[in-house]
Length: 408
Ligand SMILES: Nc1ncnc2c1ncn2[C@@H]1O[C@H](COP(=O)(O)OP(=O)(O)OP(=O)(O)O)[C@@H](O)[C@H]1O
Ligand SMILES: [Mg+2]
Image (tube, rainbow, N blue to C red; front, side, top):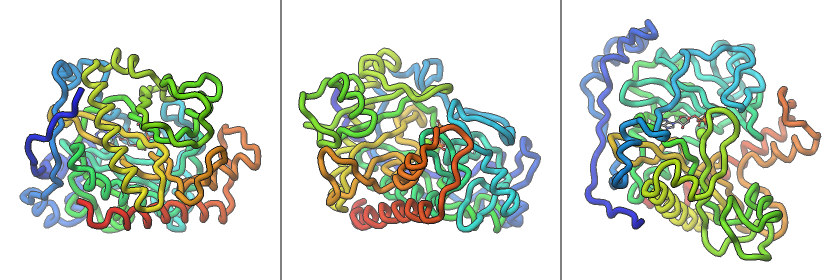
């Protein structure tokens, strides 16, 4: 199905809601923490958001918008704070509740040695705690905070990577802006000023927070692969396919594919994400929506791969999440970060050889070198390994910032 032509540009407005300035659920009054002035200003200020083209949901997908289809549920709601010991996110185990490890060092949710493992009390209801992000309720909007938590092999480590949350946020913000002509996105603004959050917490959250439009999430990871790497390579070696997509014979590890392929995965509440064929995706979400997700994902990939190339980076693969906001298909979560993408320094790409990617690769290499069985507890990471991973994230940011300068 052809991608709908953008029909008009729109400007989003962010109008904070009275209900989270005097929130009955949490029993807290965030506005008071900042002083009343913050709350009063907030009630009247309209904050300009980004412009983007509109992507209408395809005909026949209104079920998902209505919320009675098996796709498109909102972000899971949970207890204000998850249980503090041995808790799990699906099967993605927290090796240790990060809140506990941070508490031990720096009080309830704080930055220790430049690492934020758990959010401080921001006076807002917590609606979801993912492997990396904490999501707070702002009514129509959500506050997404990227911590410095590190997850590898589906396990969240007791240690984090300094600066990681800020890199993820900065990159996502840049890419949302740069790709706004391709896909409508959820970002309203970055930063936490004017949300009634007290000064100490505000400083910890600075640079790692985004106010976003609350979406009805489509529970699909939209993966695009331009190179034959990771699990796709493993499958191809045995079956000659990558996530069910037939590929020419004779391709080698990390080789560029004849053309980028869309390999979706269903997000499961329990268990790992499940790679599915396009047909299975269409059976789940409807053929029109599946086609739209594929078309938008491929377009986004194509755009970013080109920009990354200008930064000396090969965008090996990446994944997107989409949802509905006011009935419109919207790019959500994070986009083109080292956590959602495989970035390879172009000058280190050798077909058939392992490639040192610009992400948490030093961590993966280290835990493999010591033969960790991938079960909690996570091993203690030596400082030089953590520093090497932190440097990769910074390097990715530096290069991409340069390549996106001037792109709007
Ligand atoms: N605009 C949005 N509306 C609703 N949910 C969103 C939005 N943006 C992101 N999310 C959700 O917020 C969460 C962010 O947390 P994080 O990135 O740490 O999750 P994760 O551990 O990678 O994935 P999971 O969803 O499986 O927990 C994700 O569940 C994501 O789907
Ligand atoms: Mg995520």
